[in-house]
Length: 186
Image 1 (cartoon, rainbow, N blue to C red):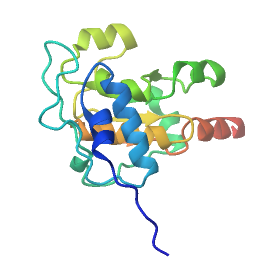
Image 2: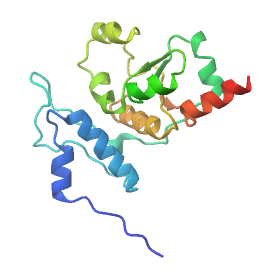
Image 3: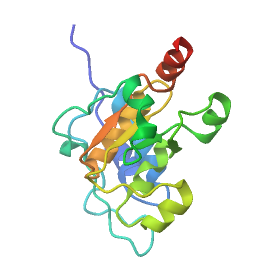
Image 4: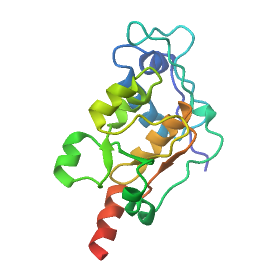
């Protein structure tokens, strides 16, 4: 049986790909729709005619085509050992409300999935990142590990960061659920 893969219509691409005031939200929505549609290859975001999403900034062109190999995952032991490695950054991409309801992994900072592009962009000043998150802004070679509740959003965020040029990106496949399960065992 051959399954049909939905095609992206011109209106869909125009609505979700142009960079505008809702760029980050639209990027997350488009990424989610592409993930759910099994169209993960050949995603080119921001065609030549897109506008800057903020005055004074250049057009941002990110494409998941830059991802040449799968994003590596980390395990519970690696996350548990993070307090001994302050050079590694653990980013929880859940919404702040979810963190209030469930809790968070120690040493993690919260950057919701829809804000990953905006926060990790090149033009964000390191001082602003430091004052907001209490950690230094990662360079493109620093190790960044993404986590969420089950791992799907973490993988999406890792793919986004990789497409932005970050070279040492990983994700925690079990994320919060795996963390809780392993913490209860110990």
